[in-house]
Length: 113
Length: 115
Image 1 (tube, each protein chain N blue to C red):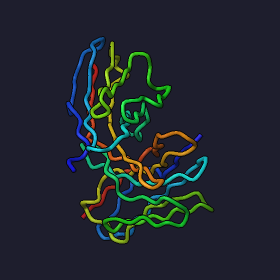
Image 2 (cartoon, helix red, strand yellow; image 1 turned 120 degrees about the vertical axis):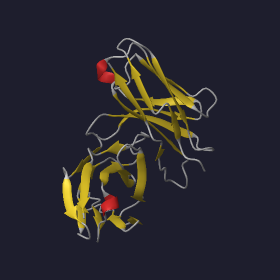
Image 3 (cartoon, helix red, strand yellow; image 1 turned 30 degrees about the vertical axis):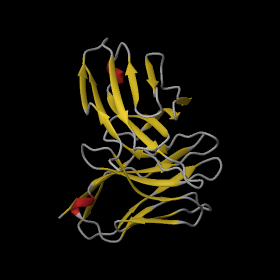
Image 4 (cartoon, each protein chain N blue to C red; image 1 turned 135 degrees about the horizontal axis):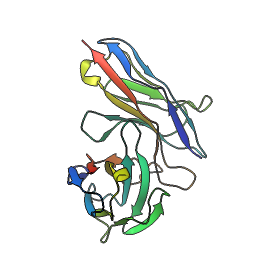
């Protein structure tokens, strides 16, 4: 079945450091890919998405490119801020006739001043 | 656009009691989803509605769980005879498919603690 594997955390970075959170997936069909972010005590917020191969999603300085050949959707940001501290979830959109979104286990990011 | 809302935000109950949660989706979104999230894990799909019809149910949704969306707007999730293993965050999401894409927007969740 569909699955998402993302790097385990926590990831601790200094402010202004470069961020990469790896995400790979297994899916039937050609699903959309998403990154969601969850701040402490809050629900999930959509960070960015890509709907087809080679699409690049971007938002708030974060980027991720839908790589079909490597089945990956790595999240990157050139310069992180303390306010980026949160848990980041890679997710696989509906595919194979099912409507559920399949999430990875999440990667906790802590940015220190 | 007020976003997805959920009520209550927190619920503490004793084992064996019944609980009910409510979700109000983004207006005009015809799809509504329930997920469960336990500590340190990603959300897991429970069930999905298109308008008032419940079209998918996960194996996670035991007989003690029931969800409704009577008029195709808000939804309720009821857990009967709660168990300690039901303690989790219950998330609701809604969506409106558009030109082949379907992005789910999540509410803040209801955190359930079963004592």
